[in-house]
Every structure is written in C-alpha cells, then in structure tokens.
Amino acid sequence: MLKKVLIVDDSALIQQMYKMMFARYKCTIVTAQNGRLGLDKLAQHPDVDLVMLDINMPVMNGLEFIKKVKELGAYERIPIIISSTEGTEEFTKQGMELGASGYVTKPVQPSELHGLIESLLMVSR
Ligand SMILES: [Mg+2]
Image (cartoon, rainbow, N blue to C red; front, side, top):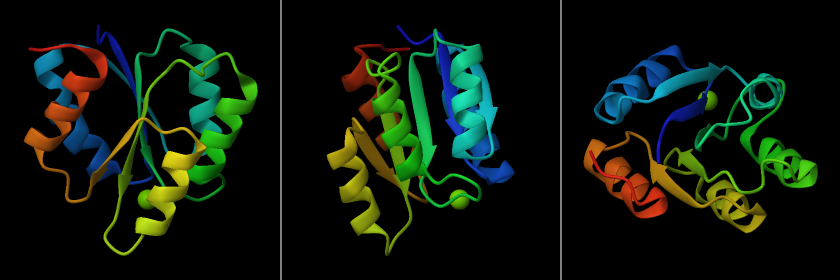
C-alpha cells in the first residue's frame, strides 16, 4: 500500500517532479529539504510508506539520514529509495550498504521509478 510518501530533497524542482510521478498512486506527499527536516517529518508522520531520498543536501545529507533512521529503529521497516546523480555511484553504494531498498538515477525516468515502487511495495495503479 502506498498512502503516504516522504520526499527528502533540497531541490524544489525535483520535489515537484516526484509529485507528478506519484500522482497516479493518489497518495499523500510530505516533503523536507534536508535529512534533519526529514527526520522531523518522520516523527510527525510515522505512517509514511516510502521515503524518496536525495544524497547531496545541506545540514544533513542522505547517507547521514539513513544512518539515523536505522539507529532509531522505529522507522526501519520503511523502504528508502535513493536518487543518485551521475558520478556519485560510490554514495549510492554506501547508501545501499546502510540499508536503502533501492535507487534511481537522476534524471529519474518515471517508468523506472514506477517499476521500482511497484516491486518494493507490491502496489500498482
Ligand atoms: Mg540535492
């Protein structure tokens, strides 16, 4: 089930793009501009079903965010999809090792994102 998604990305444009890509699931979208704010949003919305996570962000980056989420334990079951930028494959690898469930490469192709979501969450349109 995909009822609520948390998008953690410092780019307003990327957030907007995800909102369009997630429209088909008719889910609620919660956003945060960095990992620290993302943790706050998780505390406010513990029923989030999926996190879309940028790596490169100010204040707290995506890798630190994953570490924190796993440390806290309470949100461990929530799948995290990393969005990586070309040239940052090493960070993607680290994110997967830290416990991310999958990744997409920017610019994100809707079909790639939908395929990943549907296999991770067993949801369809
Ligand atoms: Mg960024």
